[in-house]
Length: 419
Image 1 (cartoon, rainbow, N blue to C red):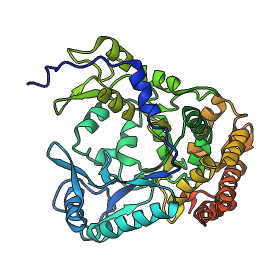
Image 2 (image 1 turned 180 degrees about the vertical axis):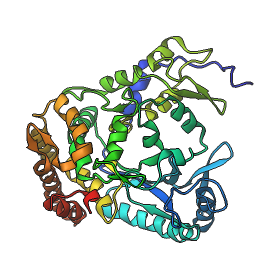
Image 3 (image 1 turned 120 degrees about the vertical axis):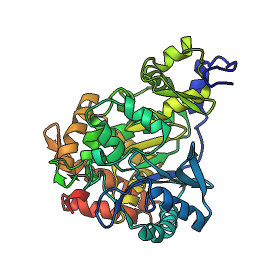
Image 4 (image 1 turned 60 degrees about the vertical axis):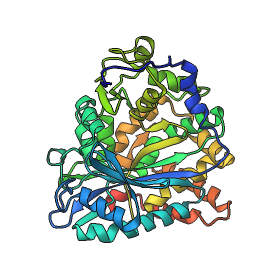
């Protein structure tokens, strides 16, 4: 059967969309970590290519052989590796991302990163490739970075609008954290607090000042790139009002234009011609909406804080030297301790949506020296970290130590790109 034809598809109901999030409710308190890094050639410091004898694709083949990983394929192209619940995948500009099975303890995330790096590093060394901890490529701009041969990336690159969308896709690298929720109320409270925290955490982890060999004048050029990429699907998912629920998030997604759907192993471009709500109501060229379409559409929505069957917090530049583990530690200390969550909520809820939104633009340039209500935010950043630190300390698992690198920086009024 041609992919242009369609099998009978059951009518998708609104409650099925809500159920995707309700099924995420769980009693666990785990932390997920996605850790992107930029691969540079040691000889030239340019971004490593995908293809060729010494490209990233061949390096992945060797890593798979050395440690018994399975290939992740897009058509015939290797775009990543998987082993049980861990993956090594490639982003559009060949950024290398580790996505780890969520863990209860930060030390276990750290151990797994070190194990995977222990396999990858000697092989990447043989290929003359190093992974760097920066939020944007310091040496190569997107014009000299070929797009990874993954079908969805070509469609995304063609559709995503904004003057820095190509920078976002091909040059940037970040760290994302996943947080569990136990109920709809718990999910939306954590979602709201994470959004309120967002510009402050973007500021304290700003690490993308140099781009293409030039000082950009921004502490986080990565943050600037996201601010200038398709604001219909990036930035804030909602106005995160107190009392909002899953329906608010679902309704926002329903009104978002669609990029493509998958049918019979092929991609069908929609290129923003209709929203998901319109697709549900009327279909498109013989295709009707399915739950798989909804899941794909949800994953092609890129707010700073994203609701899935967990809460995904996505706004941090890639950092290293131990700072990478302070990010999950920060959220673990705040999100999983009721008194800490309440303290942070009380501290930040006095700021309006417009104030938080304006701060996003200011921290891209000035990081912790940005101001809110004429007050420099460095003191607020320090207080957030201190709340998390004492929360973890009270758990007696020695995990507060993971916050020491960022605490040390903040005491010096510095962020990672200042080092």
